[in-house]
Image (cartoon, rainbow, N blue to C red):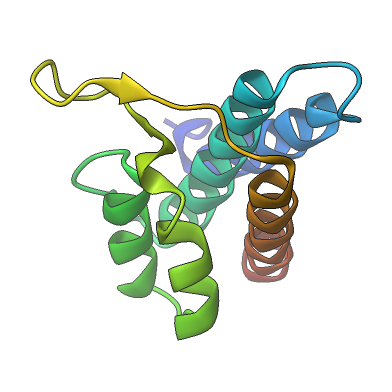
Length: 126
């Protein structure tokens, strides 16, 4: 039971690892980097939520962001920056399944927004 109370630390570490794995654009293609930055966003969000003993309804960008807003204030511009990239991959629904390759500009913007979430996660959880 004691380890369960420290899950936020694992989530925080995973977020950092995914962001580190993102690396440079030459190492992975845009789809893989999108997935890495998305998993980083999920992990940082889960760290904050777990720290506050909360959970999202699901793990879509929208569900994660809405859950995050229940425990900490989120800048509306930051929220919109992240949510506008949610539909690059819609893989949770069989009926609406689709993926597209993000552009380099989209990846740069999304990564920057997730770095802001990382900063919030580290400040909140430490």
